[in-house]
Amino acid sequence: MNQELEKQFVKELESNQNLIHKICRSYTNSDASHKDLFQEITIQLWRAYPKFRGESKFSTWMYRVAFNTAISLYRKTTRKVETTQIYDNLKELEYHDYDDSQDKQLQLLYDAIYSLNDIEKALALLYLENKNYKEIATTLGISEVNARVKMNRTKTKLKNILNP
Amino acid sequence: MVDQLDNLKNIWQNQGDSSIKFSEGDIFKMVQKKSSSIVKWILIISILEFILPNVVWFFTDFEATQNLYQNYGLSTTMKIYSIIHFMVIVVFIYLFYKNYKNISAENSVKKLLANILNTRKAVKYYIYYNITMAALIGIHMFYKIFNSELFLNKLPENTNMIMVWLVALGLFVLALFIFWGFYRILYGILLKKLKNNYYELDKN
Image (cartoon, rainbow over all chains, first blue to last red; front, top):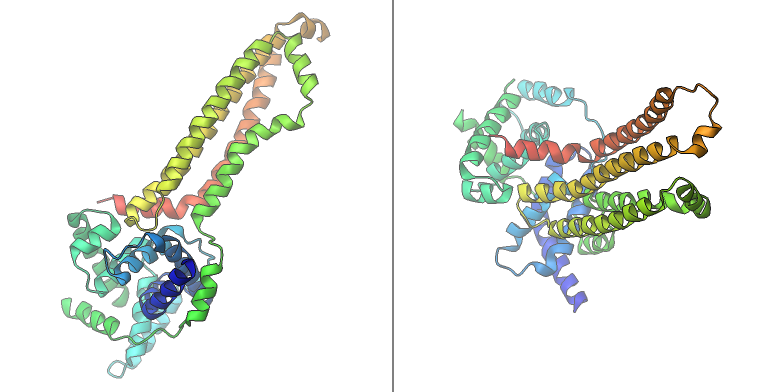
């Protein structure tokens, strides 16, 4: 029975993994720690899976556990990224002002998110994923009013990083 | 201004699959791995904290200690202290276990942070308790020993008792400070991230 459950879990996670990769890429700065974090999220998800009764969608439930792992449970093996990296990328972007590829813009966005603190990262991701304030508030465990205030601050910060 | 953020949303939502991708086989292997989460570290360190203050007694010469107590009339007092100590340990272990059980990655971010920090807090109070007890018992023992004939006879004449007290207490306080410093550093490293994140969520 346990094997059956495990099979089902692995299958669901495999097909929903993109969502987790987005979190990993935002919270880490190297492929190695990206994989580390993904692994820890997988372990935490599997541990919680027997209690998951499908009251919410698998992806919603998974998203919450993944955030919690990234913010609270994961012990970073920090590899310092040079702070100049973001600005180098920015300069490059200016040169190709009207010619920027989607990929470059996306990388820039990820770099900007990475420079935020853990909570702001979560807010930025929830915003980009188009979550409503009610969901943001319950995910983080704060009031909707507080979520709005924090969101506005994060948006401003994000804008300032992208337009220094 | 708003346009730029909307533009970011578009870029975000149109991003393709991650460049890192795991197969079902990879994920299956990950499931078998052991967690290295912060909670696991807190659990390991906490168990050590519950055990270590008591392990000290295994390394002392039991008979010699009993003789010492007897000589200075401390036997009954120490027995009472021991009984209180073990009752307190049971209460702390229960509190710790209850908090530990509450830690769930399915809670909201803030609740999870609070639960982890609370689990830690139970151990912190346990350490406070140990330090207080060590101080109380220490002072009690010094008092008994310094006032006993046995001890006073060994001292050279004209010894200033105030100096004896100062040296004894000074060494005692120094030992506590070293212990405390080490403790702060250990938990400073372990909990900094959690505390910062909790504070960040809590402030308005």
